[in-house]
Length: 261
Image 1 (spheres, rainbow, N blue to C red):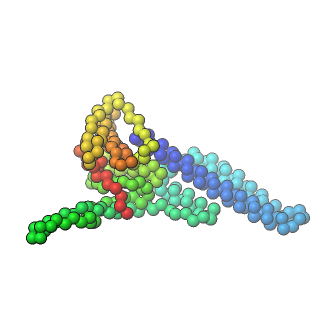
Image 2: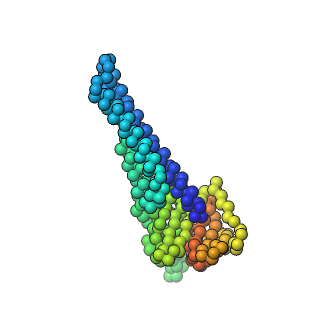
Image 3: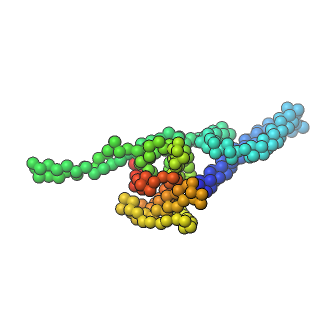
């Protein structure tokens, strides 16, 4: 799964590079059109100011190309350290250069509502009442950038969110003891290949759905992995837990709930 996380990060980096280059190209085109429009006002040869501004624009572009080459040598490490800052910076750059409204993704959490069926028995009138009501105590936190339909409602104590993708519906949590897990929500078109070497595969019940648990340990014995895969409606989920117990892995999987905003 760590390889998939790197792939997701690489795709996000390429996407941001494309946005930034687009913003620069639009800015260059805007400057050039402005200079040409001013020059067309006079049929005579361009004045010194027009020549100076044209030359200055060319120098700025050359300087930016040189800086871009240097930036590429260090951008990967920088983005891995502060991915959310880079996303916001790219959005701000587009808003300034292109002049279109941009909705910035918020890293703040929101609370998903939980609706439960409540039954009460009125013995005196021999009536059973059923009510579909909200349980505010069961509400759970969801990252503001999450675009999926489901999310985990239980996170082990001491774990904090370390990474969340806006594009692939994947999120990672870890604690100070190097325990970590990644949860992913996938559509019908997505697929997964998992090696069977040194893996133990068993079935498990995940809230009434048939799930599969793949358990294995790295060759040096340093990392134990539990991968839980199961389905619900038209979605399927993958939970990869590193150095965590099978019980905690199943509890996280069983806590997945539909998001009610």
